[in-house]
Image (cartoon, rainbow, N blue to C red; front, side, top):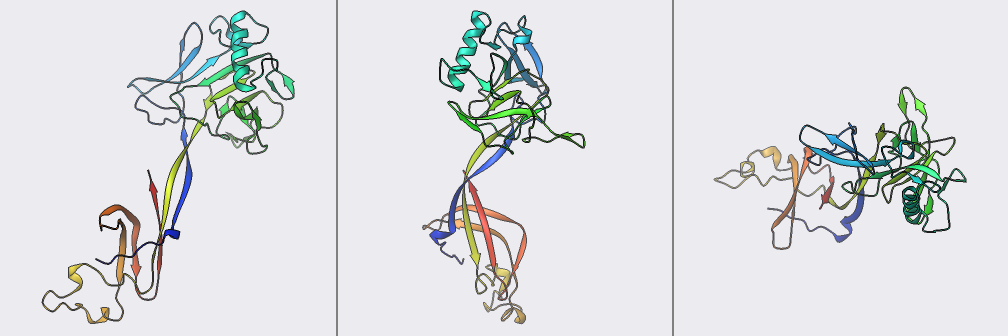
Length: 282
């Protein structure tokens, strides 16, 4: 078996971001749309996904416009419960008991509160939100930095060829999207709701190089004659042809640690070289 020691400079570490739909079924698998079923409670409206296996809570809505159903809408000037909710949200968002929650350059004394379930990992992905006809403006404008992290304005989304273009909200601000704490504050809530989460995945990239003089002769016993130990076909002496199908990574004790399969066999001979990038996710 022929082994080549990998140069330390050929190891590169990165955090790759994986975007996954927030909406999960009872098995934890992503689903395409919320398929929401409202379950009315005293203090909130809970939206769940049903895949005929069970329910998983995906987000909660508090809407002051439906006070008879939900009392977790935030109102600075409402009853004591709404004022308490407003104060709690204000402490999270701005961290100042004397400040107001603002968007569009104006204080917002009343708004709906959408809280993404703690079952969904944070942060949420800017440019993935659609709340009714609203989206954020993350692809146009840098976020405001508040006490809770980044804040993007929610604005009407461009509608092109029957599709909403996400991340390019323009016009009047109708709410804020707080991806780092899983909150959406909006003038009105909607169950026509799409959103993704951002999952950083640590990855080690290893660059493997097979030079023109390397790996041109197969380790397969069928490559040589069993009786004489010579290469079977005379034309392979000076012009061998092999096909690389996989890469094995070994430690210093010659123990196989990982195997990478190539998408197709690659021809290797004295006239070409091969550079392979292997990603190790863990």
